[in-house]
Amino acid sequence: MQRKPVLLVVSGPSGAGKDSLVDELRRLEPELAYSVSATTRARRPGEVDGVHYHFLNRENFQRRLSAGEFIESREYAGNFYGTPRRFVESALDSGRDIVMKPEVNGAAAIKTAYPETVMVFLRPPSASVLAERLERRSTENADAIAERLAIAHDEAERLAAYDYVVVNDVFDAALLQLHAILIAERTKVCRVL
Image (cartoon, rainbow, N blue to C red; front, top):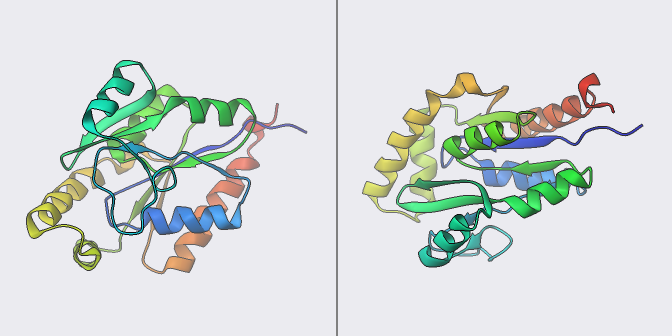
């Protein structure tokens, strides 16, 4: 029996743990396609181009944006981010489930482009835990962290647009919930062709 693929969007504030949870979900589900976003932000230590992000300069990003190569794009904390259209469409056309982790505005744009998108909001247990996580990264100054915390507050106001919420307090429990969402979505009757 064939079924329609799941387009799973995991979104939420910077520092909520999207990278870690999605990486582990992909380890559990090796056939799960993963959409690598494009960004103009600087590479962090250990990040690999094409694996963590497609790192582009602003001129190249704008050229691709003008050519319609992104499903969505947004400016976030002073940098541009976008979801490459070709990869997502190819994965869905081949019947592969796909996961992506855009920021909240990007998630809404993806939902508009693909109404069947399953939206998961990942949140930290509290604002103070989020602040601690961002500070522990040691990748941004105090002003940048304050800006990310303000953005996180605004993003939390958009929770009603999501299908699910996962609180990333205990990592293994959050992973179990995220994996259960994917499994449940695969078994929905509406996905059977």
